Length: 108
Image (cartoon, rainbow, N blue to C red; front, side):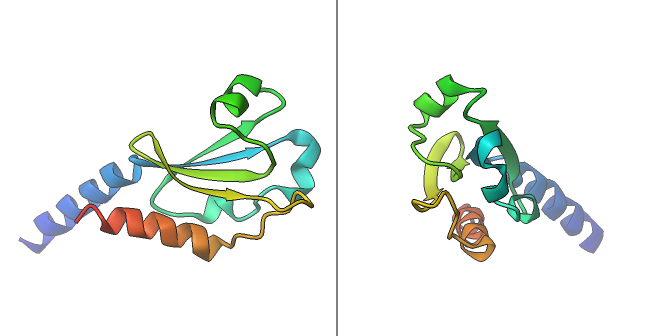
């Protein structure tokens, strides 16, 4: 019974993580200011968009400064973190992971 519960929990966590997408908008010219910890976020899919190469996506999501990190759930924007005027992200990994964790818990 415990094995079945663990398997079901694992399957559920995999399907839940695909509902949350973290999109890291940046540009090659701003690479020194990329969000270095973005790949360490858990329970989400991570997408990188170079706004210089994808101006239509930049416009669609109203990206005005890089880096910008947008957290989506089921395709809808939930939270946006933007760099300051020096093009440097001040939001921490803990803050972003906190939003992801809250979104996961809201499903229960």
